Image (cartoon, rainbow, N blue to C red; front, top):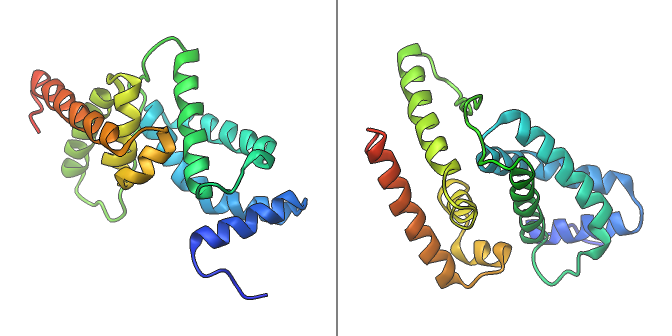
Length: 188
């Protein structure tokens, strides 16, 4: 058997191994997607603690439901769709928009100047607060396209929308974010 050539082939191989009951395969999927899922959860929930809890929930949900993966799309698309739903459901359960009061900026490597770091964190907090205030339909699109830099077609598949609907929602999200930032005195 030859080694898989691309990430989609590797994912498919790992999923098939999970279905055969090989625990190392699930661990490999977890290691491969833990950081991207956490980043997505953090940006949707706006809280490091919520993101950590959501990430755990997502992987438990994945473990329980991996048998329902039909190999009709890329595994990553299926996983991100599940992750977005879990995060949005988590926000709904708390009956409030994601709170950013306790949010910590995701640190960048090599930041030395404390003044620059403080200014950057302040801007990030304003931006995260603005993103958290978006309606769910715009927030998920903005996080996936604008922050995670996923292609429109992949986001359309994750959210079960047309590419044009993703483009329209992204445009509306940008306009609304821009207006919110201007109102807060943090013009883009």
